[in-house]
Length: 152
Image: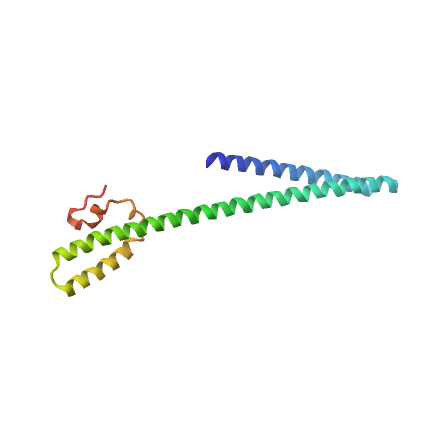
């Protein structure tokens, strides 16, 4: 991505310089047209000014379009990364939930206590889903009792 960023910066710098040079030249041609002695010279310079100013406007429009395109690509990349993380969190929550629900079923005899434990699990998983390391840590580490956790 760094190469792409560098190329984009170079491209923008080139377009900026082209815009500035074109604008400077167009303004000089406009001043020359205003100072021309004959109507033919003014008309010829006016045509040159029109062509130069059109190029300046197109350069400005291209710079703006490229900037919008880069901003949109950045937003899309962020949205894609967030969607990928959300999918990882959902998958991890499901894996943890299944593992802990099996533990609850095999270690808790009372149905009300099982229900309470499952509700507590859902609450804790929702809170844990905000943690940035939820998708990365192994399920065994995440479901281990706090006294036995070894955070890597």
